[in-house]
Length: 368
Image 1 (spheres, one colour):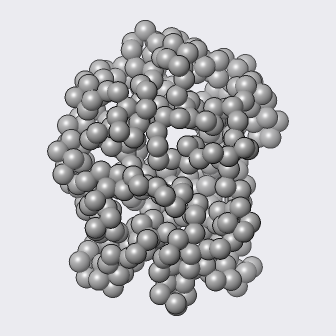
Image 2 (cartoon, helix red, strand yellow):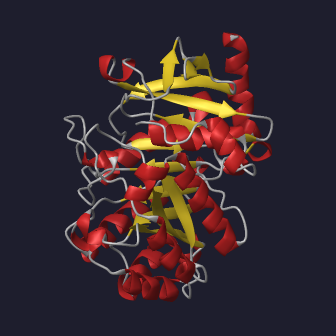
Image 3 (cartoon, rainbow, N blue to C red):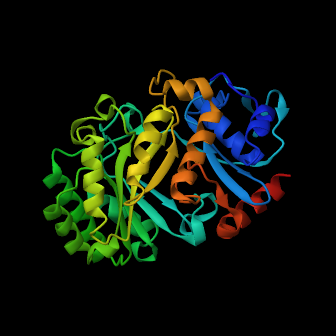
């Protein structure tokens, strides 16, 4: 995408952001030129870091962008990027049924705060819950699998008892009862295989107290549940989200999260995608959720060249939009909102990902 504001201009307007952060926001907006994405059916994964912070970036498509990959280095307007960066890996464009974050994933794992080990279990890859994420892409390699089969593979590869958290991204099932039963099946099977940690539910189909209590009973109580309610955006949700995912209005969601906050989950968050709605909708609605939940934020990324989910504000402001969104969240919550989500607005503090920085710095030194 065409750059709206250059990095030197952004630094003058937003001096409280580091150069690393500004390049990160700009690359999430502009994308990158990389013919190997199409030629090799692979996406590049980069680490960028400075003295204090670290970010991880991957790209799904090649675009007309001021950023370009040349000989495994990122160039910005024709010059090599003046930041430490490393091409960590190239992986297939298809989304895996299992992926690991944390030290158990080895040298090419995703960074996590304080060595936290999490495994995402995605038996249902054909989500069909929205119009904007990678799961909506048609790909013959994506297919739904039996939960027990996926867990057996995870147990053989890693050992479930070694993880702190299992994340269940359900996709859209027929109804709440079916979603609940699939989640309970995951819990039963993983407990039988020795997993004793917490469960992360990312979705919005399990909402009534009867089904929530059924899930909690299976896992040993609400304290074992991290819940991320998939809001994604506050306005006109039904236009891009389907079935039960897009049906609730924001007033209903606020009431639901208010009730959830009394159930003593281990944590309660809501997912929000930066770039798919205008700033006025964010500023009008996010303040109402502050007493109940914290945002699980990801900057929207295009998964194909025809994606039209960007908001007018994001298209017009570019990286500056992300600066404004982060400033607003810090204003209403009074703090940074760190997390293990890779496209978050806040980079990883390096002192909290030491296990990870040691791995990629050794790789960096070898390449240099």
